[in-house]
Length: 152
Image (cartoon, rainbow, N blue to C red; front, side):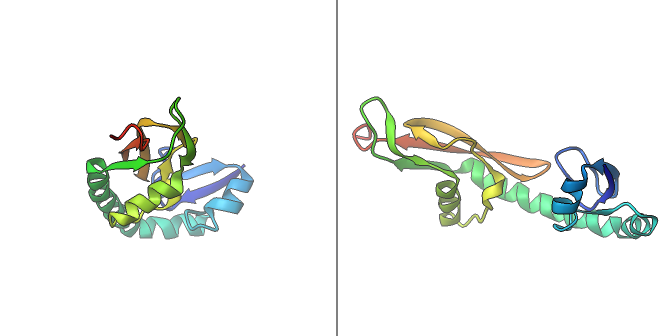
């Protein structure tokens, strides 16, 4: 296990500036290269304490912009017609890329990693897909999949 100092908020209730123990590979391959944490040395801990106010301010700005985007996403409804069999099974599927494309057409640029679809949608019906924009801000997009035959 490696001790690191966190530079941004995480779902695991890690606050900015907190010292946490993580697996060596997680620290070495993800947290540190992506600028989300630093090794917990005395020098780094002191440096982050002095930067904590600016990091918190940056996090608040990210949170408020995420909240504004969440309100827009909650108001949207993604309706798509996809050819389907008689039993409602689609001749294709709806995946994360389709959702991200729909959002960008509505002037909302969201990264694929924020969309929590799970499995691809393969049947007609109504769905709700969670989108995590920030550790404290998430929303859901309503999706309706229609078959050209059922939309008459």
